[in-house]
Length: 596
Ligand code: OXD
Ligand code: MN
Image 1 (spheres, rainbow, N blue to C red):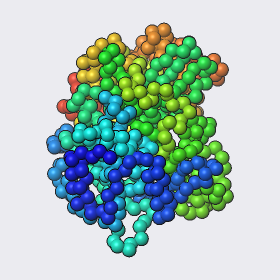
Image 2: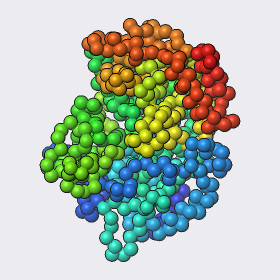
Image 3: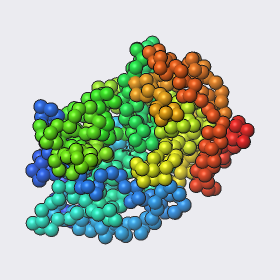
Image 4: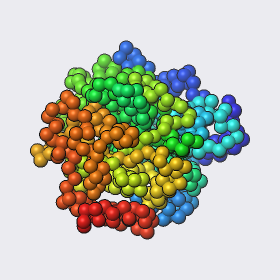
């Protein structure tokens, strides 16, 4: 393995602090992966699933205190507090490093320090970035091997070049002779997911789960990358990327941002209900985009796998996701069936007798507790997806024709509408929101704004982030080739509380309209919020029940939007004097078009 002096020093310096028993440089090979998984099984951290049911797949249960991203323990440590902005937790970098150096000291005693070289994006792509993660968790190594391109080839490409240093420890040193926990981690007040955007560093301590610990994903590919993209003039976004081919064989790619839990993975892998249409997946979570020499905006998926939410994924809701995790997959916090397979709520089959829950108890329907944690995950290789796009690893990326924004909005927002222009589209991204019910997650009921679905993932001031999007439009090499921008809402409800639009595979009908707008062939009506489809311009073949509802699905009601404007005013206030003039103007124009 080719290891630069700089990298060697970085690893040795951290090893001196963390004091592991052993240092292991990961080569990314199959043998290494197997050896690590065998250790995890032997120590009781993992269970190998039945090979005849889930070939080469493993099951982990986390500590009940470590089941999700911890937003209140996530920090953007920019030099200046105002650069982190009002939507991030901030701590001064020196102070955070002082606290964390104390925590990292001796934190790997009794453990192995693993060095993971990884590339976000196809190795060698001019859009890709190389990171090196240090961790003391086998779970992290084996997940990173699925989620990124990992191993010695990365070091060969890196040579003496710069890498993004990603430091991680579960924060649970072992005394000699001490029995290890099944899922070692630190208590909540000792968890720190810290980002240093001025120096492109990530220090994560205390958690072994998902985005807290697989540092290529949310930490590097969104928080650090968004700050780099701001400085360097490109885009790092919380967006799926999909290819859509019409019956005539013409293909377009779109990128779409939705807040967490709005069905991004389902949309990315949609099976069209309209004959002759084809959808292929480039990515389900993150897009990095740069302009190509032809003036078009090109996107890559920096990841190599799906870290998908398991519950309610089924052969009915998302067959392609189910097929993606049929083998070579790591399952976390699902339930375990007595015949060595996994189970979760909404998987489409009854729970077998004798199933073990994610908390390792025998499932008991009577106690009302779910068998799988609601945030149970599958970590599946993207190459296993039956509809993976032939260009998903193209180092150039794929050209984007349209952006979609959306959220769960039971009222007010029509099924789809198109922004009048780029800045209006940026405004639509800046006001993305999703309805939350107070009962479900203990938040104030109402619309939770999640601009560009980046609220938990923007590595700098969100007002500046809106300004960056405005700049991308202004500086585009060819404005006529900029993607068109749309807002969609699959979740509008009627007075009876039922969804008006069938969703899932029928969303292709909306995507068809979007693509036909790109091609200039679909008709639309101009409304104060943007261009809304002419009722007849959405293909409703085979959906007779929906025809009568189209008015309600597409309606733009002045009264609703006056209320919405009050909410937007409150939302815009948060960004103070860093809210770009263009966003203030767009809001004024919206009100003017409604005559308020
Ligand atoms: C995710 C998220 O896990 O957005 O992808 O929360
Ligand atoms: Mn996400």
